[in-house]
Image (cartoon, rainbow, N blue to C red; front, side, top):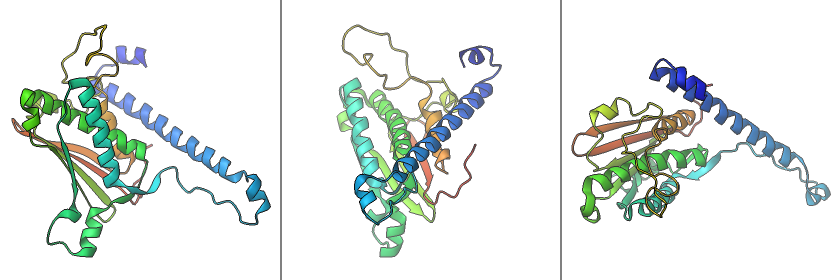
Length: 255
């Protein structure tokens, strides 16, 4: 991998290699985990051997009844804690769903909220963490000492049919044009490099941003979920990021 990165002619060559490699690693891990679960379930325990009831095999390593609203809230709290650890403070996060909007019928609102879907929770957690880290980092840099007075990051959830959507809106000033064009390029980062220190500081431990792999990997995970990831920018104001997931799991796997 290191040799290829050194001789790669274009950024697209690097992107193609990284995406292909990670797709195969992720799918291999999913298949091997599924195989291990099936094997462990097929081995009857002592009580099952005495019982006439056959063991029930798991149908998926993903969760078929994930409460997406709860997952988003928990991930937001995880990211806020990480942001506070690295920056001393973090913007507030407000999570809502289409069910909270007035004037919706009960059946229509229940479908719009779409709290349950077939996903691998770890993948969606990774997607949300990477987007929220970017949003919180932008808010910290844009608002500075006035961060406590800044509007919260807004997260809206909705769904229709097989699609589930998550919109993350921040008022962090937006992504500059020169970085928007390369946002999904591996190893490209808009974060300012930090010098390592030997004491406890934001440079100690895991980096909050600046690795250059979070956003392209988040989009890759979204596509593996049968969806996609995109963002829109209002310069000087903020960024809206859209995460689309497919709860029907009927989209061809990109392998």
